Image (cartoon, rainbow, N blue to C red; front, side, top):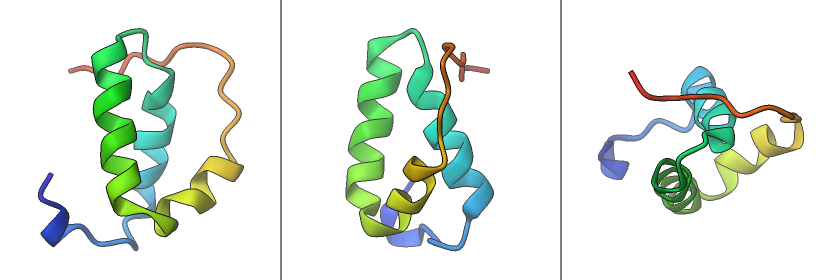
Length: 60
């Protein structure tokens, strides 16, 4: 994803990215963490509502 083209109003995409932070593969989590960090404040709202207790595979 090119951050220059990211739309912070893409709430479904942000929700899916947060869900995928429970993935069992560390590199997936690292990549998501770096991307969410680059997005910054628009992503923080979705962290507050997340409470996944089981890993969510996010490859496909």
